[in-house]
Length: 221
Image 1 (cartoon, rainbow, N blue to C red):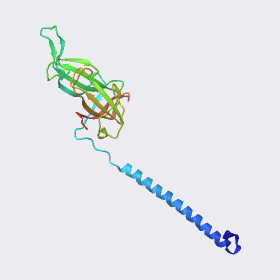
Image 2 (image 1 turned 45 degrees about the horizontal axis):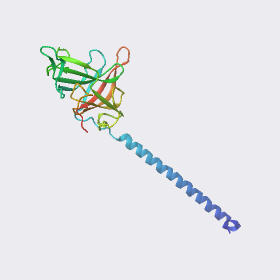
Image 3 (image 1 turned 120 degrees about the horizontal axis):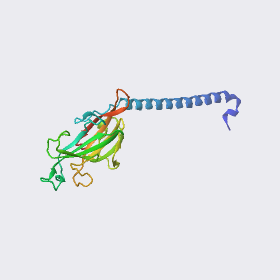
Image 4 (image 1 turned 180 degrees about the horizontal axis):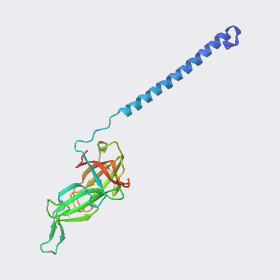
């Protein structure tokens, strides 16, 4: 039989029930408070976590897509697949022992490779001893949004392609070969990691005309 059925203990039972309800509410409030404190602590930890510094070999530069823009040179040296012969019937034949692999950007704000071959080692784009081969020389993997170059810290196993749209705050890994014939070459891959730090805008129109980049060539995780 329930003790609260007796009139002489009814008041005492009511007090016990009220105390139990109060204790349950207090326990619930304490649990909610504790969870809130844990959430605030976790958020504070995330906010206070320092951003990784740029790697020691980081180079910061800017590129644009105007006609006089200079791409970023990734490789300038001997063609590992042997010299290219542009005119075998010429006397003497036109031979290009050297290859230049560069990365730039186009008007669509895509990364764009530049491949050229050269007759002399101290080639530059203004002398007559080089031959442009077009806008292909490797592949690109888009890593996604990252906090900086240091967060591009591995070689992707999937996602390689070309071209790749440039996005501010995103990371990329480039792979290329020391060869003028990327698709046909058996030479080994070389890698560079890139981070699009900010856009460059036109002083007159305000439109995007280039990008400020951070990169490390010959990247190995």
